[in-house]
Amino acid sequence: MTSVDSDSARWPQVVVHTDGGCQGNPGVGAWACVLQSGDRRREHSGGALATTNNRMELSAAIGALRLLKRPCRVTLYTDSDYLRQGITGWIRGWKRNGWKTRDRMPVKNQDLWQELDSLAAVHCIEWKWLKGHAGHAENERCDFLAGSVMDRLRREAGPARLAAALKEFEAGALTTATSGASSAGLAPPSRLS
Image (cartoon, rainbow, N blue to C red; front, side, top):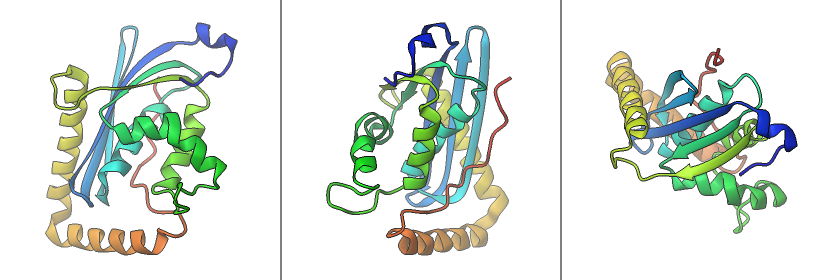
């Protein structure tokens, strides 16, 4: 849980479900989130022609937190242990070590981890893991939304464009592995109104 200050008890409560996925890893990918606060509900999704599953899991949480207009008490459910363990534990060591792992290697997806860390700092968040594909209605909804985005991207892009995007992504991933930067594939969403 992230503790911001004692005023957080008066902040709006938001329940968030997230999911990200990839067809191929790397491959075409997508993410989705469902936000609920009282009787208000918002679904949002996005994707990339070439990405990884972990980037999409991170992008789902980022996409959800970007929608919040003000500091909130957030319960965020994810089926990604990578996301939950990273933001609740590993990230402290990475920041302390200059965004290097224990083995002194650059942290993968550093750009997304830094954005998520910055967005999370504004809120009081409880990060909860749940088993994917286990019948949780909102997790299944996120999975469906992300799958729909991947299907649409595949149809609209066609095989040649998908192959070119994957080649570009893989070349970029190889050249940026030492710099810690890579493309997010995350378009800025509109804010939750």
